[in-house]
Image 1 (cartoon, rainbow, N blue to C red):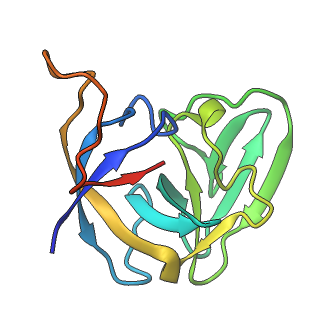
Image 2 (cartoon, rainbow, N blue to C red):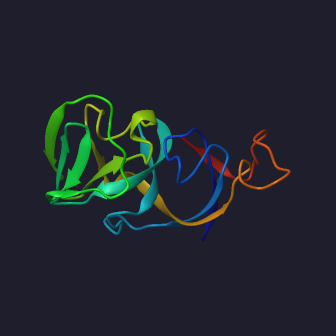
Length: 150
C-alpha cells in the first residue's frame, strides 16, 4: 500500500523541500539499501533522511567531509566545522543523514547515531510535486491525507 508523505523543513534540500509531496511504500526491516530515502521514527518524531550507512559500513566525518567505507559520498556538501569522527554501523542499524548537512539534525549529531531497522517504516519511491516548484502553488495548509515528516 502506497502512502503520501509531505516534507516539513529543509533537511533534505535540495532533493526535497518544505511542503514537497512524496510517494512512499512500506519497507520490511532490513530491506533498506544505501542511498534510499526513508521515513522512520526517532525521538518521538517521524523523520525523512537518506540511508548513508547500512549494516557493517564504516562511516567517517573528516574535516567536514562524509566518507563511507573510505569513499567520499558524492554530492554531499561539507559540514561546517572541522571535527573528525568514525562509526561502524551495527547489524540491524542504519546511519541516516539529510541532504542538507548544515540544516539537518541526523546521525552525525545524535547521541545514539544509529536508527534500528525496526523503526524504518517506508522508503520514498517518487517525488510527486513541490509547491515551490510548481507555478501557482504555494506552501501553506498541508493536505490532511498526507503524513508530514520533518
